[in-house]
Amino acid sequence: MLIRDKVQPLYVGSDEPDLVGYYPKWLDNLADDVTLEGSMLDGVVVGKEGVRAIVVAIRAFYDRQEHKFADVYRENRFIEEYIAVVGGEPSAVSCSSPTMPMGKPSTSWRVTGHVAR
Image (cartoon, rainbow, N blue to C red; front, side, top):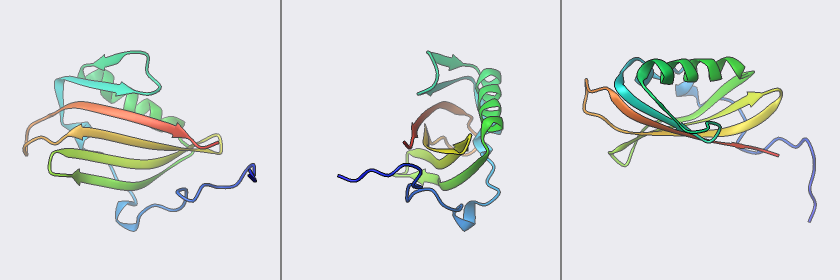
């Protein structure tokens, strides 16, 4: 088996054209008791101020963020998938939340990440 260092994974590339400049609107519509789980968190964050603060702070670490998908999936889940590049290294990130009726705040958000090595 041949393994090469510093070869860019195939999933790393440019944004999907429709997602250039994407802003997560769900971030402006969080329930008071929203929860956030993440592969890099030790526990669960509860409350919209904490969830918003973490999501905004994490984005500040990214050299760049390339969205691949952001939409409703199978009628009951909202999914975001993107590549976050930190320190020149790509990480695939997948976020999901139950979809909420129009006007209802988001109640949970789960984030998983995988660093390509």
